[in-house]
Amino acid sequence: MPDVKVFPCPFCKEFVASDATQCRFCKLTLSEATIKRGVEAQAGANKRYRRDHYLKHMLTGLGIFAASSLITVGSVWAAFTSERGGFYVVAWGFIITGAADFIYGLYGFLGEALTKK
Image (tube, rainbow, N blue to C red; front, side):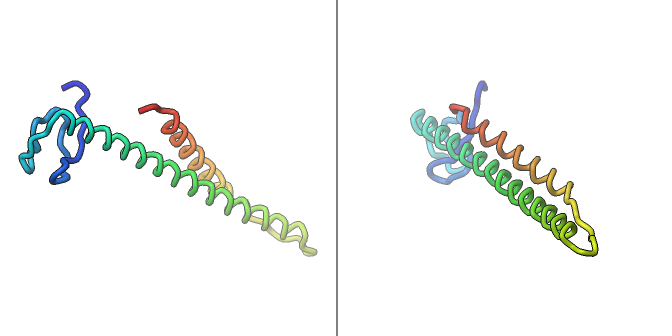
């Protein structure tokens, strides 16, 4: 079974292996062209899903990074401009987490964009 893929049956939408000659759920006979089209369509859907997954990580990481950086800069500014001194908050954990999530998403997104499959 070299390189067996799965795809949804055109009739019942259950997933079928590409080496099957008929759907094991609805017993529909599968031609080579149907199998090839189904595998290609499923590969495209998988690629879109992964791309969207990485894009969500990028946007979430960027939002966390920006918000925590804004809180840090705002609290430092408020502490330095206060006549009595003051205190400030440095949100290192959120800044690092946001940056790491953004980098993870960027790495995955570029990996998906550069693959030809």
